Length: 115
Length: 106
Image (cartoon, rainbow over all chains, first blue to last red; front, side, top):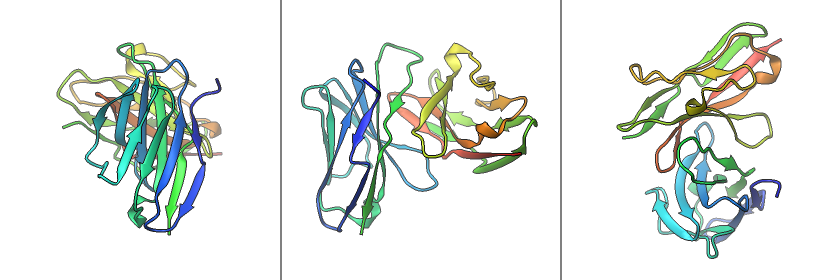
């Protein structure tokens, strides 16, 4: 296990198309997070899972966005009817939630460009 | 509301000079603060956390609840410290600041 993996690294899509990203967390981590980062900004929270349960969703996550973690392992983030404003780096992170002090391990991200 | 503020977008210091990256936070509960770093073309990675009171790569950060600050400091900057630094506050999830780009001039 070499860390958090995200696929693809880059995605260029036409406006209106659907896209799906995948994240494979560190295997023993029970929490998985999705963040979005645009130029000049820090990562912004989208949603997170504890095992297979989606526990929190940001209001940034419009109804065009959906995330799943069906077996509590990998997760997918789908964006339907993409818009140019969706262009960003989508980051996945995982952690083992055991109380105070646990930080995240981030993946390399998927850079989405909507043209 | 939870918020993390990093007032400096860009910071340049000479090699060997002290460096301080500022971070202020707003949080109603007992805060957990972290610093993350992103070197060029690398993923975001955890640098240090206040709860462990550690020094990583010569960096330290002290949580000051009175001033609601968690500034990152290093007494002698090195060229390899050039990177993007993000302060983060942990609630149910992490709230990140907008980041400070540190450049260490040789």
